[in-house]
Image (tube, rainbow, N blue to C red):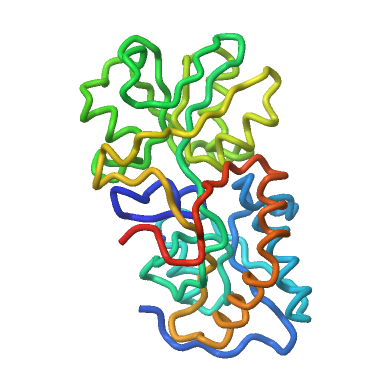
Length: 279
């Protein structure tokens, strides 16, 4: 996902970048746009949870599944959905204004990730230990577009001990956002503040035990948001596909939640039947 607003840059940077009417997809085909190198969301081996969800959708709709692979960076929507290379993006912030969004199918939050053997058990941005611990955050680009933890730490005057890791990273390597969690694993930083699906997944696949704890006090830093509802996105005006996807979401909520949990995604215990996201 990649967004351009200051509150949601990393959510869509991890997940997706008005649109014109397009020709119909071949009969019986579900065309999906996805990043080929962006676990836990998607990759070209179709090993991400968005890949698995796309397969569930295709089976439910009785369609074959095909992909257009494109790095989810600036211009992703313009070069895929808008260019009629596909009809569906599996993960976008609910209400994302470049697409027609479905009902949200999960809500997650930013988290702290630290080594279990350090016993930090952080959950608050106001924890005084953050003034001395080495903290890693994802960076998108200019300061105004950096993710909520980076901006909140800046507001608190916690700057000199913060280390930035590009969300885009070196695309020649597998899963560039993983470098942040790997830095915790290696002890280069004490704690990472990361988008929940990234933190949860890569912590589960770490070579050393890591602790993942939701950031609990994000509401103190309004207008920064730390929790986001995630939906599927279709082309503007494609109400028929949107409505079929909404029906799928309603009928498969338990299976979707089980899939997400199997990938370590921290789910917020809040209804996702109403829009949320980046208003």
